[in-house]
Length: 191
Image (cartoon, rainbow, N blue to C red):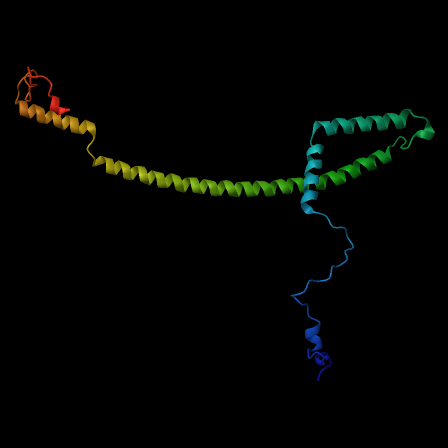
């Protein structure tokens, strides 16, 4: 017997005993990195990207930079935290840009995903509309074909006028084929 096929007291081999059991929950693993909700992070990045794209952000950023520059130029030397070459300001602006760019890209990717879903839904709706339109077109064509064989009121009226003319045999219109009965009162029983 090979060492890995050694029998255990329960009758199972060592190879089968080390397998993961699917009928039992696994132990929770400890994570080194923190966990976060990708949807919540995506929503936060969209909010930040929306704010970065506003005039309000540009105004506030301009105000902060002007205050920074004025303070570091006019304040007493021992209170200046970023003297003339303004290296710390450059570092802060670079840091802000390095975070803003990926957040804006993440927000754009999420918007692209939403747009893709909306376009797919629009495409399916258009296909349904086209199918409905084609169906209704076929139905209208069938109704037109069917109505072509149906006697309309105008056609019946013209046919009856032709029959009346034939019955009159060329008599003037004043002489009717079925003259109205005169001199008789209303029939009470006809009601």
